[in-house]
Structures are given as structure tokens and as C-alpha cells.
Length: 181
Image 1 (cartoon, one colour):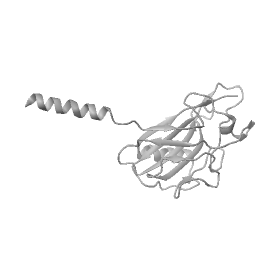
Image 2: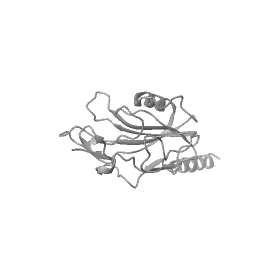
Image 3: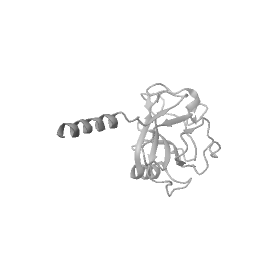
Image 4: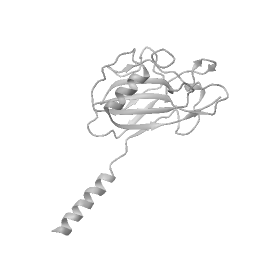
């Protein structure tokens, strides 16, 4: 009996370790590779297309009630990083965002909201590190959340969105491309 119990316990551990990993992918960028001018901001001395990348996520954790997507530069010389994009209240049935979501939210799933970036506007704000800095990391993260909605609106700052995401996260998947000039 004891041998049977141990065998069943080991089978359970093997099944658990084979669970699919929560992942994020994009045809527009690669982890650890430089962003193209398509995802670079057009302003602050940068000259790019300021176009949000297409994103797709797979195998979210059980219990996911909604998703959020953020783009954050932890290397910005601000003392608190730089929020380039926050999108929240993405329904749990949605597993991708198209490229080129506008500041008006065109292209977002119904109910999803874009918060304010550190550029001071809603919508995607591309990479734009200071000239001469070492390449910055741009963390594109999809968050699986235990709540269907966050009590925030389009005026929510990146810091407020980040606080609410950490309080409600049950999983994250990330891509971190880089960019320097």
C-alpha cells in the first residue's frame, strides 16, 4: 500500500511539473533583441513610428478572470522607471492584442482600458532612452488577474496600475527587448 501511495504521489508531481508555462509572444519583437523604429517613440528627441507591438499569450493560470498588459522601462533615469503602456480589464477570453492600437483605444477588446503613460497621455508610448545611455530594457508583461476588472480609468498612472496589478496577479509572462541610441 505504501508503495502504491508513493507511486501515485510521484505521478502527481510529474503531472504538475508538465503543466504548460504561461508565455507571451510577439511577431514584432524578440526577448533580449533590439526593438525596431516601429516601436520607438516619436518625440523627446526620438523619431519612430510609435506603434504598439502585436502580442499573444498562451496557457494562463487557472482562475484567470482578466488580463492586463504593461510596457515598462526599469532603466529610465527617473528614479522610478518609466511606464510606456498600461492596458487593463482585458476579458479572460482574449489572448492577444493586435499591433497598432491607437491612443483612442481603437483595436482594444471591448471593456479594456489604456491608462496614462509617463509621457502624460493614454495609449502606447514607444522606447526613447536618453541619447548615449546603454540600451534600456523594455519589459512587456501580460498579467493574469484574479479579478474581472480593476477599479481604474484612463487617468490611472502607471504606478497606480502597477500597484493594482501586483495586488491581483496570479501569473505573469514577459518579453524584454532592448533599445539604445
